[in-house]
Amino acid sequence: MNNFNMIYRILKYLEKAMDYDEADLDFISADKLGVTKQRWVAIMEMLESEGYITGLSIKRSIDGEICCSVAHPRITLKGLEYLQENSIMQKAASLAKGVADIIS
Image (tube, rainbow, N blue to C red; front, side, top):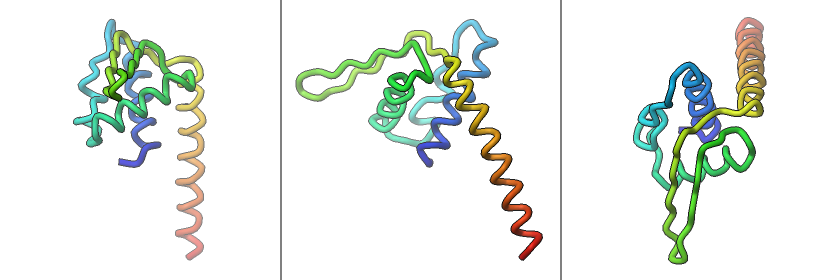
């Protein structure tokens, strides 16, 4: 799966999970997204460090082992803005593709 598609799916799920008491991480697990645990942890770490999500704790041991603890993941305002901008860009790209198909 494309990294940006994975990011979008994670953020989209966390946006929907705002209506729940607690997010079910099975919907955005590495297995469900079809990626390795290492890639999933790296993506989650990026999302948290960039301010798109909160509720994540990643610790690295001296030997390089990664321990990812996701207590109560939540999307942030910045994450919501990313979804909004991405949605607009997808619509624009879809429209442009449709126009290109008509012209061809």
